[in-house]
Image (cartoon, rainbow, N blue to C red; front, side):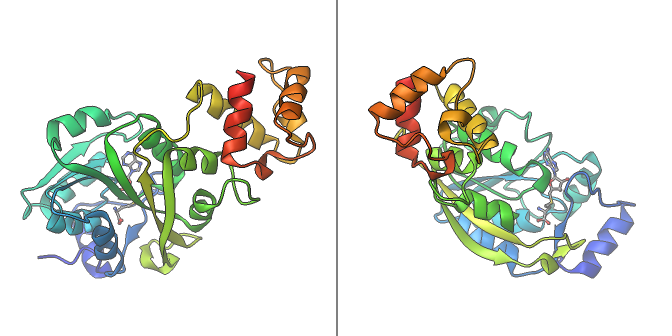
Length: 282
Ligand code: SAM
């Protein structure tokens, strides 16, 4: 069996297939043999787990997941990696390899066709150029996913794990905390990748909230308001939340009614305050 985190083996496999890494697809492959087993341990927490992996690369994390999970469905966009994966994953009969773009793929269909009756976990070393769109797609589609264990750039992890109502929070923090409970699991140095990126990474876990704890009248409009507010985060909420849908007068009256200072900034408001403002305005 090959060691897919061994840099010499990786180079050998890639050169055998005449494969050159694509920077634009975020292809930084893991070369530290402690990282993937640790991620897989976090993701597969019982014997009825079906995993969806995004971006298997040459399959280093895929095999660790397959050793532990009931089934693994792995989605890779780069067609050139398919013959490599067919070779590196050939010893496992519980892996389904899908060629596709994670942002376009129908997760509901994948789950129904491959992972019925299992507890669904998403686990991935994410392509960093689309970290937020992937996480948002997984959360907004209300899929039957229980947990997401992903590696992201350290800075993105800090934003995702920040508390709403603090300076580190952004629009994505609000969105993620709306749907899930987020926790940082462990740090991964940039030296653990080939090629080594400019920044370090972190593995985080998102536990999806089962019941709709946070209720807004219209989720799409709520997140549009949040995005707009954070794009003007240095302004007071009175100025950052005005739009063609929300007049200054209406906003002022709502803030007065809720006893929220008109000079506060969006990053200072709690989840509860943001939701209440929205529900009053719409
Ligand atoms: N899992 C491997 C590892 O840990 O070494 C590779 C991770 S690498 C950071 C990201 C992977 O995502 C690459 O294999 C890349 O080709 C793939 N990828 C990039 N964009 C994608 C997309 N839109 N849909 C599916 N896979 C994608």
